[in-house]
Amino acid sequence: MFQVGLTGGMGSGKTVVCSVLGKLGIPVYDADSRARRIMNEDPLLRVEIVELFGKEAYLDGTLNRSFLADRVFGDQEMLSRLNKLVHPAVRRDYSSWLALQTSPYVVEEAAILFESGADRFMDMIILVYAPMELRISRVMERDGIGEEQVRKRMKHQMDEEEKKGLADRVITNDGNEMLLPQIIALHQEILERVKHTKGSPGNTKLNN
Image (cartoon, rainbow, N blue to C red; front, side, top):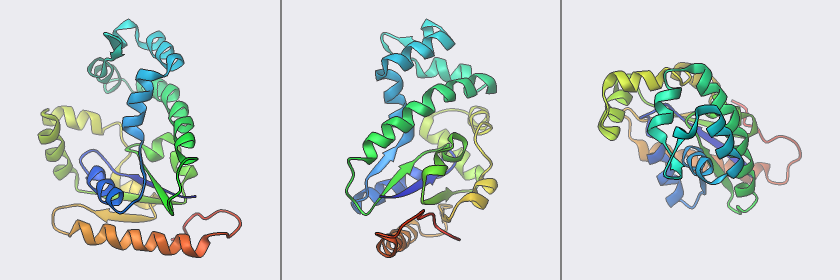
């Protein structure tokens, strides 16, 4: 199964791109939403999170996201410790999901694809890119929070320019370049790639 990792900073437009790919029949694994579900449903992970953050980590049996956000976005060490608990559980969940797929390729959408190490398992990496100021305004409008809060969250994500150097392909979502033609063209490119590599031995990692 050809695996495509799709990433991008907060407010870049990953969800829009994945929505289009979904309409094209491509299964998308949303690592961020699946992680939240796992943090609620995995008994062992719940125990580990409570041990790390205290009973306040869950409110009425449900993950207290605002409490956790306040704890980790201002503390890099605590964020790292949380990620070390959550990332292995997400990888296991992704592997189970992947085994059920039958499409030509699949997409894993993850804001911290590189930071989590999930990029190592992908055959191709796509970055959805938008300028920082535009991303900030989008997140402020979407989440109803202030600029300072957005910038605080963004500090914990890898620099977009660094991601550009690691990605195989870049989709630009800056409001100027049309988005849909870029997605369709990339979809067709991946289908061609899959067709030519199907049945070939060894790693299918895309060469730039």
